[in-house]
Amino acid sequence: MAVSGIISAIIIGLIIGALGRLVIPGRQKIPIWLTMVIGIVAALIGTAIARGLGVATTRGVDWIELIIQVALAALGVAAAVALFRRKSVG
Image (cartoon, rainbow, N blue to C red; front, top):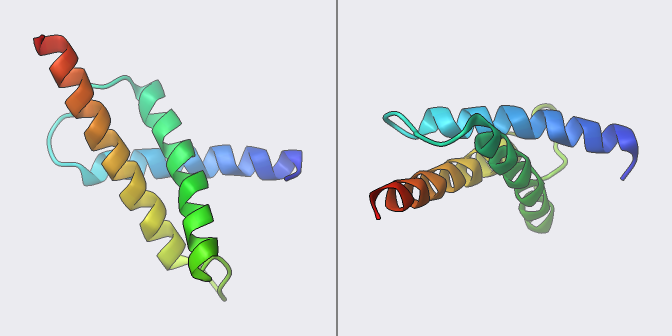
């Protein structure tokens, strides 16, 4: 992966993280930097899953890949919120 690919993956990951956070209802009491990290990781894992399924490269927008990435980011944000809630309570 070239430097431009890494930079674009980070930018896409930041957007995916924000979308994942928006999908979760209510207020999330986690730091924004954690949302960004979750988004980057979700974007990378989502791309790998989409490649494994053979849907990573399509004509136009890769909607299936995007849905996978946002779903992973939403799961990651939900897990982080649950961990932060448990940490602050106990």
